[in-house]
Amino acid sequence: MLSLHQPLCLCLVNRLRNRYAMNPCCYYPCQNRGICVRYGLDRYECDCTRTGFYGENCTIPEFWTRVYRLLKPSPNIVHYILTHFDWLWDIINRTFLRDWLMHKVLTVRANLIPSPPTYNSKYDYLNWEAYSNITYYTRILPPVPQDCPLPMGTKGKIKLPDPKLLAEKFLLRQNFRPDPQGTNLMFAFFAQHFTHQFFKTHNHIGLGFTKGLAHGVDAGHVYGDTLDRQLDLRLHKDGKLKYQVVNGEMYPPTVLDAPVKMSYPPSVPPEQQLAIGQEVFGLLPGLSMYATLWLREHNRVCDILKQEHPTWGDEQLFQTTRLIIIGTDFLKSCGFYFAWEPLVDIIYDCYKNLYQNGQLQ
Image 1 (tube, rainbow, N blue to C red):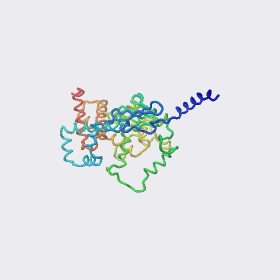
Image 2 (image 1 turned 90 degrees about the vertical axis):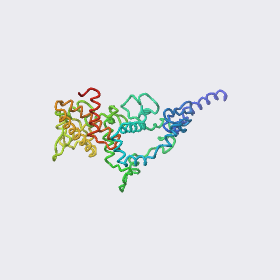
Image 3 (image 1 turned 45 degrees about the vertical axis):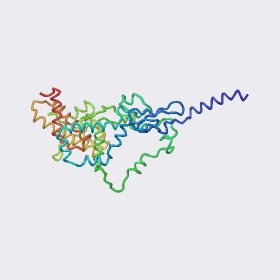
Image 4 (image 1 turned 180 degrees about the horizontal axis):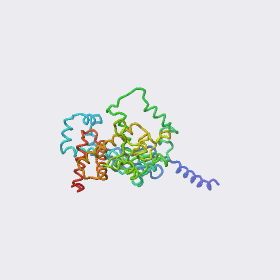
């Protein structure tokens, strides 16, 4: 009788072991952006492709990786070089070295982010939608496999702490501490303002989703992410955007003059709601400030172009100015260390490209 039940018991044991076997990827064995792939029950393999490392856990550097790590200066040294030696940067910005060096800077910065993205916020394994489905936020760090015993894999507590508590523990300060690299709160506002042209949370679906905007620099946060919004924000005269004058200074118009949807509390009357390209920018002073700066810059460039090209109509003035604003915004974000002269450099480069492409005679 016992011999009859023995195969059944072994079968149940094997099924339970298969069901509750620890996923080895929960230990995060793959280093240096290696991708952990589980196979079998308790085995894994690290995909080290394009990481610059090899070995079982992607921990052995390749030859050129060793050379790069040997020659690479520390972040403090890089920052010091980039923020000092004005005479050197003056020479670079006025010679052929500028284009070459800027190309290298942009390439190095771009390579810090995996492209195409490795993961998104839905899947914990490689998939095509991480690249093609832009309604999901992509991930830089690998997600925790869903079958891990703890929220952080195999370490940490069973229940994650309250995010508000973590923010207070790590970020709340009682005394002012200056940033060692000299940045301030306006840098955070600038970063948020810049990224909102391609990242826009789709709150009606969930925080892990975006509106699927174009993943590029198009100044949609200045001009609106749709054509209808853009047309409502435009003055339709001299290529300019709508504006209002308060105490002799230019500010964004209200939603009464530019009827676009903005996210304001119900207590804010329409005559006090600023109409901006991104609907949440009116909620924070820093974002409103940058929106005002780009509005003024757009209209200022329009005045310059109209004076230089009196035959241009509203549409050509607007579209050409938008090209200049996009270039200015992009270069200010990626090359803020360099002594750029936006009015000279950007307009010159824009005109040079337009002439080369036959768009200007």
